[in-house]
Length: 249
Image (cartoon, rainbow, N blue to C red; front, side, top):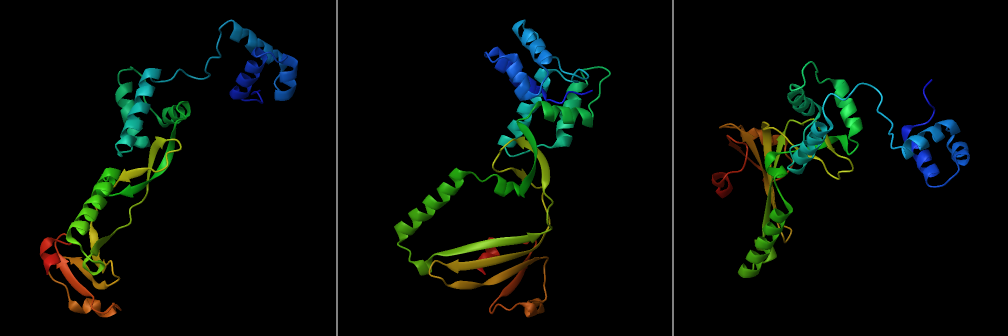
């Protein structure tokens, strides 16, 4: 019959006895047989540790620790890995161990042996957005402030142009990350865009009518018949994004 207490509870009980609490008192509080506690207290004093049950791990401890470091390193550079990538890496290492193969069972045990790792759903970002750092934002705002001060630009001379693209919705990706990570990002592959909207407004509150950009070479103007925004325009580009030529037009 399996014991009704956990290994952690037994370890805690043994430590209490080693710290001076009578074994009978600890046994009554923890509901662990006093004979069991005394047995493992004696083993602890003799330097005998409790061996892990079940088969011997497929990979050496050093190899699994290296895989954990690799997972964390990939997270740091924002290229997370998931179950399949970890299994592939473990399989490459296991080829040095004849007659052993990596399975889903190994992956579950690996995650159990490395509690600092956990499965998370990563928020998908494009490669360009995923590469933005805090210093990039700081440089942008300091450069804008410098230009405004030097030119003495007024609110009606400062415009913000925003380009928003519409594409197929990407499913979130399951990755392995450090437990308690605040944000988990993953880079998405190149996607095909269906339409881009250009919005523009001044610091004084003036809003320029939007421009809709579609892929291709031509577009029917009656496509705007369903648009309720007065002055809205439509155009086309091969990339579906705003280029310098279209911006000047």
